[in-house]
Length: 268
Image (cartoon, rainbow, N blue to C red; front, side, top):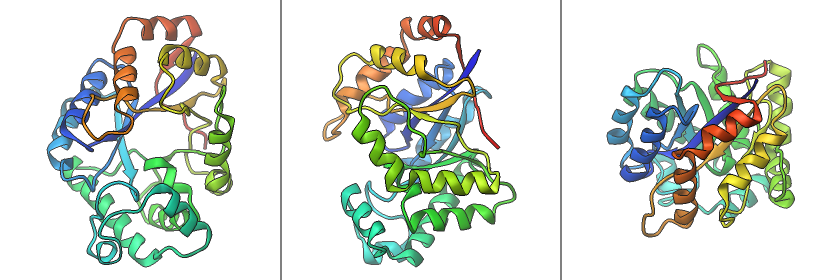
């Protein structure tokens, strides 16, 4: 049996999205969920985590591209968080306000810990911002100060099939550099990353079956975005398709046929 860590991202972004993820988690259709804590809906959403099965873990989805900053230091510079493209450009030109980003990291981490009552079991980034130059060093330094490092999403080995350009961009905007550091330090990290697509493909089951076929023997993490159809959400249609499949009868059958179980798998 290979192990798949199926992680639903964006918990806390909206009440309806959090409820949709919590329903899937309660039915043990997920292994984990990653939480956006700078959302105005975070504290109310966090209450939904308390009744989830022990098999489903939650972590911090560090966010620098959605909504407004949580810290005063970053809000003074960025009243609204920038687009992913702008953030990537600034990161690679070494023009990020790193002191303010460190304050934002501390604020988002504290918001998670206060609402959940414990440190996050894993840490990753909304739109993979955790691996960007500068941001990566801020997070690594912050994690080094924790009593023990949580699991980190490894974005240096992104498996297909398809969407090769998008997978290459994830790995080469900082994923491979992060993977090297995590391996050198011996920190827990996911063996591989799956789940990358354009959010436009209508047959999510076909995508999942393809990802299950290439899941390595040592396991991997598949990020997903199940949720409702909400106005203004650019990937609302994809969220609905993902939620329908993950909550339906085909998903457990596909897992069984592929010889895959849900769980956590970390390299150390």
